[in-house]
Length: 140
Ligand SMILES: Cc1cc2nc3c(=O)[nH]c(=O)nc-3n(C[C@H](O)[C@H](O)[C@H](O)COP(=O)(O)O)c2cc1C
Image (cartoon, rainbow, N blue to C red; front, side, top):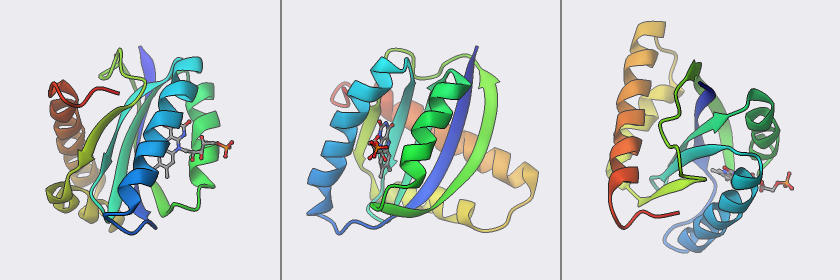
């Protein structure tokens, strides 16, 4: 079992130029996350980010401290935390590329929602991220 956290945030990058910045984030994440034995996935829609981080709770908290203070995004909102088997085992950071259609799965999560609706949307978003991670061209 692992501690798993899903958050969403609003990107402060301008695309398409921001793609290079996202690539740098993913590259740095692969190194640091591997050192911390944290796995996960990141989606960038252009307007938003969504990320799953899973591993030791202390390691995830350490990463979240850095991520919270990162000026490349804002409104970091934790959507879901739970203990569960790793969904992204083997992925120090699976990156789904620039998937603008995922915006409609992320944007509602910034509004106040019932716990049930939040859980439902969160699981749908995570399922999408798992699908992306399985695509052959999405290696870390
Ligand atoms: C959307 C987003 C996701 C990020 N995800 C990670 C991550 O999974 N692992 C990581 O080491 N850094 C990640 N970063 C970069 C960190 O915010 C931070 O810049 C980096 O870890 C260096 O940390 P430090 O500034 O505390 O030294 C992410 C940044 C953004 C904007």
